Every structure is written in structure tokens, then in C-alpha cells.
Image (cartoon, rainbow, N blue to C red; front, side):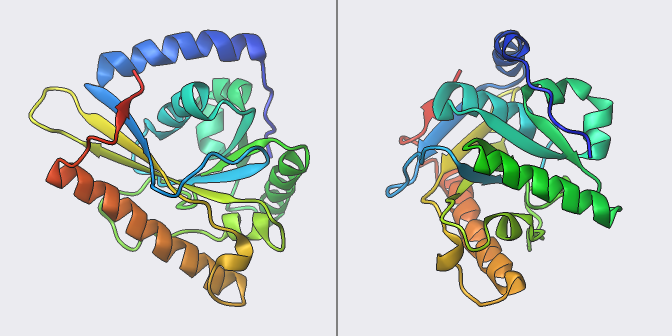
Length: 221
């Protein structure tokens, strides 16, 4: 397991670079909160769908301008090795091919929450096409929050082209779930419940974009 190696100086300068990088490649990055959504204080676990290379950079920008919490993100070991700068902004690795490494990464994640930090997780594990259903959530979010009162906050990312040369991304933060609120008694059943509810929320964002009912979304660039 490769731990994070956070640097506040790097964090600041990377944010300056990243917002310009996103502005260059995207027509817009837009954000909205659901009707009953709120931003919980740390510790919290934010779960995000994973469909593009851009996801980590979009999440970083979201945290810098909206969430504004000291954050850590679990990433595949391959991604950390290819882009080691992610360690300096809170990235730490998991190797799903090594059961012992999974345990170490899960324990590291739990320790960050115990330290009252914010954790970001891509429960699909690997990058999957935006329209694939089922989403295929791995049970990490459920295991990390088992028998705790830590909120699981859904953050839905939806990328689209709308008649312009550059794409847009719509981000929606929804009402938190808690382990005790998820249906079922086993971790498998609760993970299925989390995936089911998250899928419904993600599909709602998709429908917002299709119907062009996006007046509640505000630009982040």
C-alpha cells in the first residue's frame, strides 16, 4: 500500500494549474446540490462514479472550491505509480490483486476518518463507461463505514457534449446515506442497496442534462 504524502504547498499550486487545465479542456464544470442535500463536516465518505480519466481532477477541483475539507482519495496502485503527484494531494493506493494490501488500504482509510479527515472513494474500482448498468460497486464504502455514524455522500458526475466543441461535466451532490439506513443485514446486501440508490441519483442527473433542466447547476470555473 502506497500512503498519501500530502503537501499544502503543492496543493495550492496544483489547484492553480488544475483550474486552468479544466477550463482549457471543458466548456463548463457545473455543480448542484439535491433538494435535501447538505455538506456534512469531516469525517465523511464521498462516493463518486468513475467513468473517465478526468474524475480525480474534477473531484479535486470540487473539493477546493466547494467542499473545502482536508481530503484523501483511494486510487488503484497502477494510477498512483503512473501519476505519483496524486500522493501530494491525498491519493493513496489499493492493490485489489493482493488481499493483504486491500486490508492495509482499508485500515488506512479508516484511520483517516478517525483523524476526522474526508475520504473520497470510487466504488466501481475501475473506470467503466458512463452508461454501463449495473454500476458494479465494490463493497469498500460499506466496509469502511460499517457500524459507524459516518455519512456516505453520493457525488454524481455526468459528462456530455451539448452542441459545442468541448464537453461539459455536471456534478450533483445528494443527501447522505448512513450504514444503518441501507437495506439488508449483510455487507453484500447493504452494498447492493447503496448501488441501487446511487444509480437512481446518477440517472436523475443524466435526465436533467437530456431535458436541459439544469438551471439549478452553477458553474465552478
